[in-house]
Image (cartoon, rainbow, N blue to C red; front, side):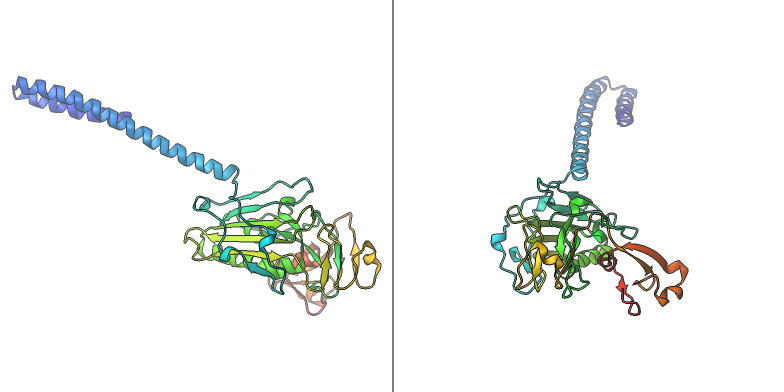
Length: 347
């Protein structure tokens, strides 16, 4: 800026000298006055411009700091009273399938934000602007160390994979890279996790990878009263750069399991038509284990075919060593990472 001022002053001075060289004293005096006025006006304009540019940059920096430090989502006018009773479908559209975001929420700057646990230890709103830079670059690890509120390790023969409950990511690992984050994991049924939430997560992940655009993404667990298990989750998503042309939805996903009755206050459960009690774990119909330590099974993963096997499976010996990976965790964890069970050993 100082160099520009010096250059302008030199031009003005040169103009004044040129007039003086022609021997026109009166014109020279007039030119000197005008030059002085012009110089002062130029300096004033440059200072004003500099202040304007400075204010603009400060505003941008302040906005970036707000987004990077803590992003407070807008509230939704939503309650369980708006939700119809589960009717056989895993989710229902809310607000005409339009998210409750406002224009000021939309940003193409990636971020993720998770609410602190409440006084009962329950998760709150999970909020993000999902971009490729948030997505994981390595496979997900074990999450068995996290015990969300209402957690029970319980099996039923009528449930796919046997286990009634999964540790459900509010913002899926494939979108955020958040793994064993207790602020991002709730107790959810297998039906909620795989049939309800996963298709919407996959939709967002595919869109972001294909377009490298951003998706504003919010998941709100809905707890009734002081229940430890959420009745369901509100999922909202809107693609940013194309103003929702690519991704736009607002759905409530039911935390239910067909054929199973759940006590949402405690997480206890029973086959539909049977009485829920803590003794249900000793019956033939249900098998419950309250684990105090992380539990799991060792599997061998084929990273090429995306199949998983018991270590004793004959297919393991035929595997290329570069595709072989040992994994300790639950069957549900492996499946949620995109692996299918081997048809020989049926793990």
